[in-house]
Image 1 (cartoon, one colour):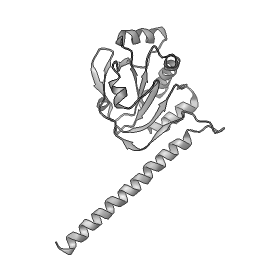
Image 2 (cartoon, one colour):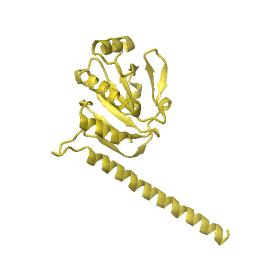
Image 3 (tube, one colour):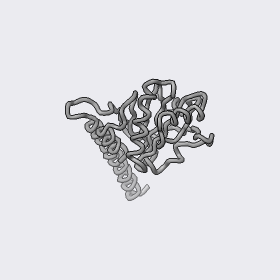
Image 4 (cartoon, rainbow, N blue to C red):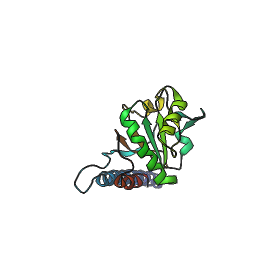
Amino acid sequence: MTSIRIFGRVAAAVAMIGVALYGGSLLAAEGDALRALDQRADGSAILNLVVSDGPMEPPPIVFTDEAGEELSLADYRGTPVAVHFWATWCFPCRAEMPTMDALQRELGDELVILPLSLDRDGAPLVRNYYDDHDLVTLPVMIDEKMKAGRALRVHGIPATVFINADGAEVARVLGDRDWSDPDVIELVRHIIE
């Protein structure tokens, strides 16, 4: 092997290490920035985010829409997504869903919220809940056997997983929140930018 080839391979290896180190510090800085933004002036958490340490490509998940058509996260590639797991029998979820609808109304095309219901009675039950509570912005989505929830390692509801436009998990929120709170809306805008 010539010295030029050896030098070229060494230079390429050094460049790859530099990119990995620099990229890793950028990701850590982004995570630290999100954690800092998740604080109110009094020091309390806004969403109490669980921030990913780096881009985590979620496993492929499948869920159904109100018409029974199968969809996946790949169908939303290029747009930030919030995958929200909930059920009509979950009291904290029921209280939270009108605020999730308000968040979708506020953010419009900036974010797609996929409210995956775990209800075994499927879309008709969820549609009735939406109609009874004037939820008009969110789509009816079903994860009846919680396959998507298990794939994303969701262990309780409500839970929300934020996926960036590149398809990588950025952060998650465990438990219910008031998604219509102005501080929450501002933080969500930072999460998805």
